[in-house]
Length: 154
Image (cartoon, rainbow, N blue to C red; front, side, top):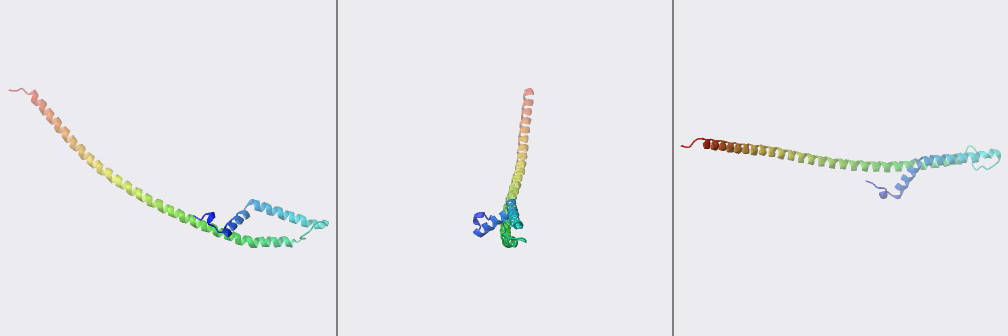
């Protein structure tokens, strides 16, 4: 990730200016300044103050200068944002690859555990069959022993 501290002074300045230009605060301040400028310079009809008489050539020059600098500053900020976005996407892709690798490892572990459980089940069934056989043999012996006791001795 490209952090703000890694940006050059010019990049930080471009980010700050672009952020300000794209704000409601900037629009309100600029609107108030233009309204004040036009109002003051329109008072020339009454013979009062006038610095930039109609058609407001100086105001037009100020707007042209602002536009001349705003365009490149916004492009610089846009390029920097594109760089941040690219780094963010690269980081996200790396994290996704890492997650995919972990998922594959988990699936392999689940497969191994499943195989061991199946083998364990087979062995358990064999042990149960053997125990059943032993129990049946013991039952048969006990039944036979019981029959021998019941038969009279001669």
